[in-house]
Image (cartoon, rainbow over all chains, first blue to last red; front, top):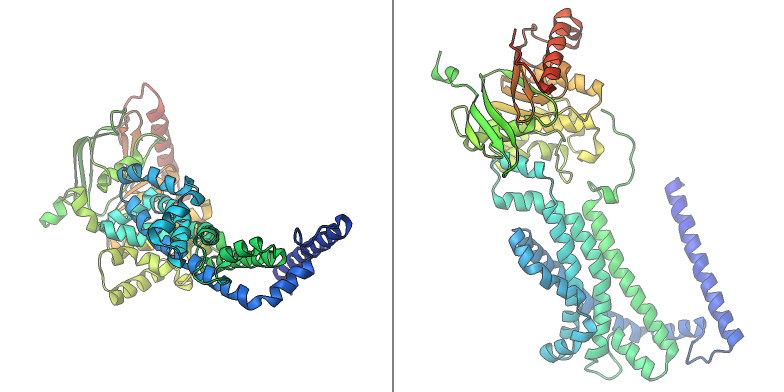
Amino acid sequence: MNSNARRRLVNFANAAAVFAALLVLWQLVLWIFRVPSYMLPSPSAVARAFVDRFSTILIALEITGEESAGGLIASILIGLLIALLFAQSRWVRRMLYPYTLLLQTVPIIAIAPLILMWVGAGAASVGVIAFIISLAPVIFNTTQGLISVDENLVHLFLMHNASPSQILFKLRLPHAVPSLFVGMRIASGLAVIGAVTGELYAGSSRVGVGGLGYSILYASTQLQTDYLFALVLATTVLGFAFFFLVMFFEWYCLHNWHESVRVPDADSDS
Amino acid sequence: MTADRIVPMVEIENLGKRYGTGQPVLGGISLSVAKGEFVTLIGPSGCGKSTMLKLISGLTPPSAGSIRVDGMAPKDAREIVSYIFQDATLLPWRTVEQNVGLGLELEGVARPTREQKTTALLELVGLTHVVKSYPRQLSGGMKMRVSIARALATNPRLLLMDEPFAALDEMTRDHLNEEILRLQAEQKWTAVFVTHSVAEAIFLSTRIVVLAPNPGRIHAEFAVDLPVPRTRSKRDTPEFDALAVKVSHALRAALAPEDAPVTSP
């Protein structure tokens, strides 16, 4: 086994140990302070709720997953297009940047009811909320990547009589891909948060069946705290899944050339 | 013989340059570079050496005077000009061969021709073993070789080089100096080269132009009559040393405030 694999194993063991310690602590708190189960269920109760309601949780996971994915994909595509527009001139950036900032600063909770009103209750408006909350980081990071190209590289292209579109597609865009991924990583987490938040408002068309946000609301009104915990766990899993999916995609696209995902290799000779 | 022989590769008359309303960077420069010459611009920092190359390549317009490249305006002459920067300026997402083929690709050369050309050039600069590697896997010297191959791929008649070897260690630098001379002997392009190193200037050039700062202007010129082909051992001759002393002297005088112009021998 090489040192890299061993280090990874040690890291994993450490994380597992911390997790086990937390579970023990949790159980101890319950015993010592005699917390009623509707306030804080035991780890085993949460696990049981998770197993018992697995099929329902899976459906909720699927619904929220689809809404988040829809919002995320839309924010990546539209964010990229807006960034391409922003990269065209400083003038465009100056004029439109403040409005992009608005996207990031307006609390999503505040505009969620509006969106519901405009788009109508259901998955579509939840997707729109996920899209709005995850759009800004894609725009900001990608724009930064597009405009921060080394001046000499632009000169090099000009010396070969490159057209503006060649400079955009063969120089600025590839140069911006690592920054686009930074934006995508942030956006992936926000899209899940946006979808869950949206569902708290949007509700469900069928009683008892909805996304994670809807189910969390339902569980809390029913005081099914163990189920609520299981749902929170599922939400976390969804967030991680999105994050790692983007990470994997990033590694796949960049590992050949980019420093951020570079595995240190043997010194090359001259 | 023909008219082509008479038109200089670079013809600069009374050139002046200032950025915005600032102090002039260059003033009253006249310089003619004949075809096949290897002219080196040397001078203290801030004397506008790099700006000269930017002007010759048309990347920035002159504030006064005129520049012709092979009888054309600099911007129209880009097809016959290549530029080598101080950094290798490779595209990190492209392999070595894709980097070398960049200029041809931008100029719309078809893939088969491009690949043929790229392969030949990688052979010429001794990089056939890293064709599929990415720049990050290469040493500084190898990156510069890729940069040179890329510049030569478009068959330039004029090569502008802005301190291309300044960031390299001395061994690599000496090696690449020999390499550049070999390539020029084979391909017969004209070169305008910028450096801080007197030894490099003498080794490479047929003519050395010493610039003085504030504003950048020509302070002295030296013809280099050392025999060709030049190899590393030729650097230890008395003629080489004598010229190095003269050029160093001129450089120091260029920095002195009350510099008297030094004439070429």
